[in-house]
Length: 196
Ligand code: HEM
Ligand code: HEM
Picture 1 (cartoon, rainbow, N blue to C red):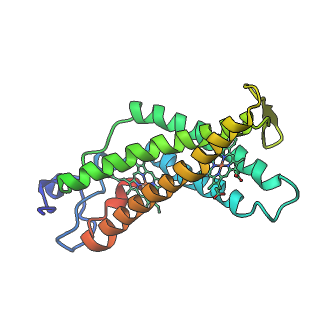
Picture 2: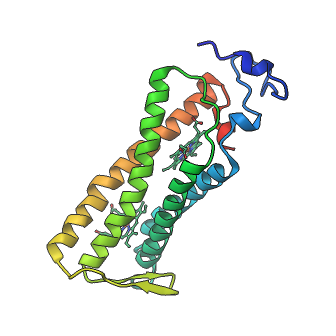
Picture 3: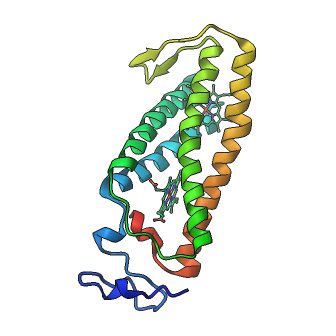
C-alpha cells in the first residue's frame, strides 16, 4: 500500500518517524478537530466509568453504584447527543490512507458505536421507568417516570440493554481498538495521532 504519498512533501507537514511506512499526521488537516478529540476521549472515559459502576455494584450500600451507573449513563447519553451535533458541524480531517475495505469497516464501526452508545442509555432509562423507578442524577434532581409501570415492558428493555446492546458495544469497541492497535504496531502509520 503506497502510504508515503505526496502529503509528506506538503509544506508544514513533518514526518512522524524516519520509517518509510509512516505517514505524516501532524498538520491540523490530518487531525480530527479539537472538539471531536475532546468528545472522543470524553466518551471513552464516561463509558469506562459507567461500566465500572456496574463492576462495583455489589460492594456499595444499597443501590449506590447502580444509581451512579444510571447517572453516568444518562450523562453519556447527553454527551453523545452533543457529540453527534458536533459531528455534523465540525470539519472532517483529510481521509486516512488505507485500503477501501478498511475504510468501509472503520466507517461501519464508528457509525455503529454512535448508534449503540445512544441506544444503550435510552434502553436503560426505559427499563427503569417501566420498572416504576425515576432516575436520580447524582442526587441533584430526578428524571421522573414518564410512563406507566409495566413489568413485562421493563423486562423487555432489560433484555435489550443487557443481552443485546451491551455485547454489541463490547464487540464493536473490541474491533475498533484492535484496528487502532493494528495501525499502530503492524502498519506503523501513526493513525492514532489523528485523534491525539
Ligand atoms: C451507555 C450507557 C450505559 C452502558 C454502557 C450500560 C451498561 C450496562 C451493563 C454492562 C450492565 C450489566 C449487564 C450485566 O448484568 O451483565 C447494565 C445494567 C443495568 N443498567 Fe446500564 N448501561 C448504560 C446506561 C444505563 C442507564 C442510562 C440506565 C438507567 C437510567 C441503566 C440502567 C441499568 C440497570 C437498572 C441495570 C441492571 C440490570 C440488571 O441487573 O438486570 N443503564 N448496564
Ligand atoms: C484505547 C481506546 C481507543 C483508541 C486508541 C481509539 C482510537 C481512535 C482513532 C485513532 C480514531 C480515528 C480514526 C480515523 O481517523 O480514521 C478513532 C475514532 C473513533 N472512535 Fe476511537 N479509540 C478508542 C476507543 C474508543 C471507544 C471506547 C469508542 C466508543 C465506544 C470509540 C469511538 C470512536 C468513534 C465513534 C470514532 C469516529 C470518530 C467520529 O466520527 O467522531 N473509540 N478512535
